[in-house]
Length: 173
Image (cartoon, rainbow, N blue to C red):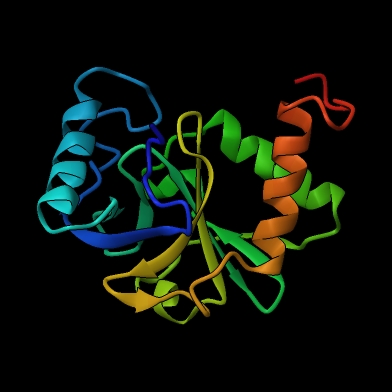
């Protein structure tokens, strides 16, 4: 099944577990020990009835899901956390950033305060197993109207059209 369940969007929570600090483990590495942190985030979310959890970094800013990069949309701009916020430099993350630029969607990489996810217009995860999954709610608060928003839809469709061979792969992926 899908890594992040929810055909109509995923219901997620902010985890009580923080991402590892950059000076404790190499957070940019897909290292075995780093996965324990992800497992704790995911197990906590599951126990509490959520499809997935979102970790904060050690400074309290949004980081990422247990196995996904996080994107927010506000007023047509795409926001994501920079690598300095203990996120993995994922292939799918890079694909979405590339597609956003190609579609003229402004991209901002900056530290994102937790409260931004509660007031954004759209939010979604990306990852090899999660692909592009929109978030319906965070901590039981609807993201926008709970449906996949227009910016997420553009990026979702562009991604899947290339992956499924319905559009030419002009990026050599």
